[in-house]
Length: 316
Figure 1 (cartoon, rainbow, N blue to C red):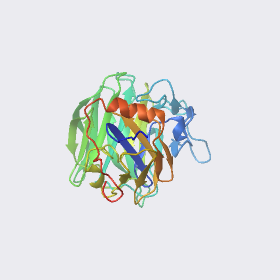
Figure 2: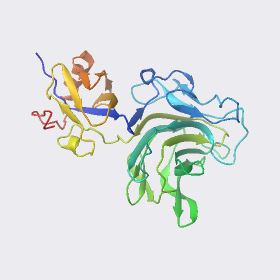
Figure 3: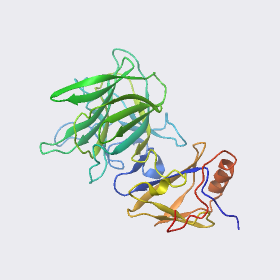
Figure 4: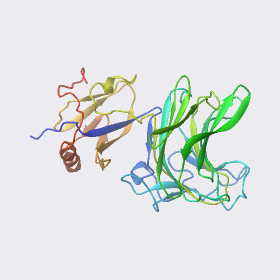
């Protein structure tokens, strides 16, 4: 029987505590229309007892990757223009807060209007405090095409101008990496700024918001704490504290995932970025699918870095 070797693939597993991949597809439970109430997302409230705003949408008018959908945030007719970006979509990241100084978040973004009358768009993370909530990240996409990062030094808070810029109607990828000493921002894998945290607050919510003027923003392929997760390069699987193990390798029928945390779902991509089928049941993945075999065959023709062939439960 033909054996499947996990080479030339990027294997991503979403753990039960803080790692997430979000691409707004039906397979993740999303449907077209208002994002409020879908898969842990909410939108800006309109007052006690009133429904939240309804024009922040799951749409199939634009997207990146192999899917069909994205999140669109846009002007909400229920509100006038705002002094600050507060209108948009919010996502709870779970009951366990993510450490403010140990995380990676990335996402694809496209903004449609580059003009002085267009909206300010922001990506924010927020953490719980005794008085309600506190910003942790505020990355601002100004209508002039510049990108700014909120910084706090001592008691003074400002928006620092980064070297990053954006172009209207062009997808770009943002990555934000928090470490023990600083927070670094990247656009299309080029670092645009490194500085202080806005506040040193663990966070459990992210927000994509605007000040309700003109223009749209599309967001897709959000990755939380798995930007570099589970590369099939030898040795990397055991470098994380989660110590996820995959066995057997090669596999003929079922691939087992051994992890201290519960795996919620997985995604497998070939080296060209094409997502291939993967059925996860409990801790086992069915590797007999024709699409996966075709993807591996295609990927093996390119230069790859392989998992060791003698991977096992105790040696992965």
